[in-house]
Length: 305
Image 1 (cartoon, rainbow, N blue to C red):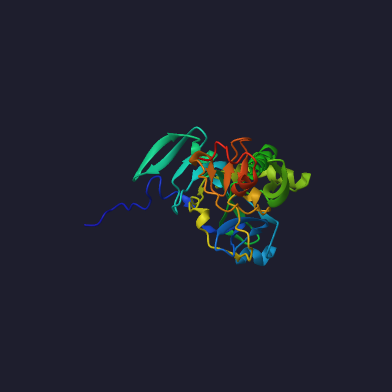
Image 2 (tube, one colour):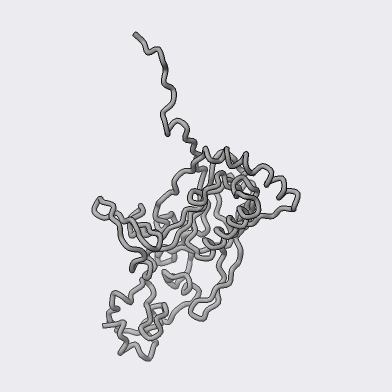
């Protein structure tokens, strides 16, 4: 005897809708020096999949985007993230508390911790955008660890929402913008992200009039969770025929430090060791390790034993 009533939906499941991830857009490339050392290198353009390059060219600095939903926690989730040497995410926090995977269990810790100070943990924002001229059938993921990019993207989104009452399904532009920064008395140029609303008053009024209808439809959609893979394990894009081994810290990559003196065997104390750099015990600033070899205070430096 068959059932007289058919069940065709599951509560809180059958009504869910999720857009697929179409690809990943990167903000830099991985290089390998002549000595075989891999290191990240920032570029001033979007590193795009072939279908995006077909529309915007090989090295675009501006792409047209839209956000499919009006939830900033899904279109631009942000957290402190630590990967360690593994492929997957090991810890993420919000500046007050963090969840960490240890020995197969998820434990709660205070945040931030020493990994943020040593550069192993970084602030990370993951932008999820549609690129209408390429496809409206899904989203592209863009990850940034830039402080200025996170602030500027949040600012652009909030500005659009203040103007229109929403930021989803609004034609926007995502740009790489040259930004001058200063670190350790050195001027540098970096290429940050900006979300720009470029429209006249007629377009603005038309978008405002559609806000209620757009928000109603956008509430039915969800976005895929960000890909949580260690960016340090990305494949190498370029083999760089340089003779100087690159520093782990970008602010030192432009300068070739002097060679270490013969017979230098002093051991750097762990709490001062930051990979290819050292926290200078005299100034509290980051310096390349090889700078210590020519420092007049090297022999009595408390950073070494």
